[in-house]
Length: 286
Length: 92
Image 1: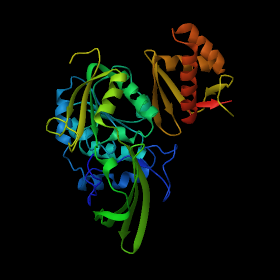
Image 2: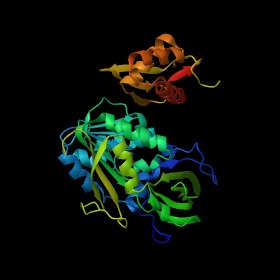
Image 3: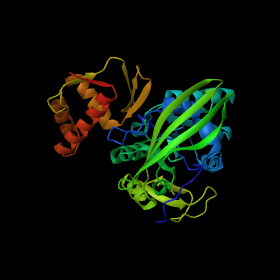
Image 4: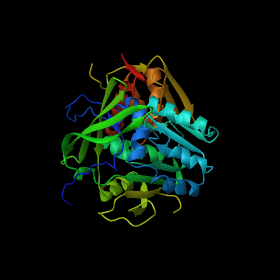
């Protein structure tokens, strides 16, 4: 493993939010979905400065190859859902956050994509869909790393296996380097404007390397005129290696067809900037 | 109150249950959240709605499914914990 390192701009922030008071330590009660409603106002702003659209074409290609409806886990504001649907693909996005989904639905209306896109407020551990309904399930942008507890990950993989059609594909994008981040406190990492307000993000990073858990404590500070508001969140991620995730997928009934190291389809290795697993439901065609 | 086989449960007010080909979708009207149950979970829901007592649900599932009673009990209690935690069942 390489030496711990810092990044001034968190290009790999994968946004799964757990609201916490300042200084709160990770506990059994931390779940990755807490705080999404509070975070929704900043989600697109932050992504525009970090991940941008660099993964979107990858998911569009995968969606175009699917022979049936596509499901996106943790769709948030529709950053991936809507571009996939613009290619003529029928997509369902599921997310726990009502505020995120409200923004996604507004963008869907503006994009005149209502005929092809459904947004559902639901829990990815118990997906509210019939068995074998989807030909592709997308897990972009580290969504599975928001499942901090092993039982939650296992429940989610079982739930995906249930709703995926025989031969259907399951695409997973993991963020590899979070456990290697250095710990720091109250560092301003992003700044800009949002809706006429000045916005800055001040964050702290904590590591529980024994559990492979990384916690980002974040403060979004908005200034409009003389008015200042502060919004606090914590982001909690659990990072598994590619072999660890592969074993869990296989136990859940998937066959791992490929591990990719970039969004263009290059091969994976341990130093890769991106970890993508392409799996299919065992018992189906390759 | 600790959850166990002697616990009695019932669907919460404001929970909508809809069966779809043996599986089901649940809606918590208060939160607007949807949840899915597979075939066995759906059967557990139906049995609990009739019997209420989790011991009776476990016994009925053990009659209907070829699985170890201990496994059924473990899974049933986990399901009950999740349903109660999400406001879909009420513990009496």
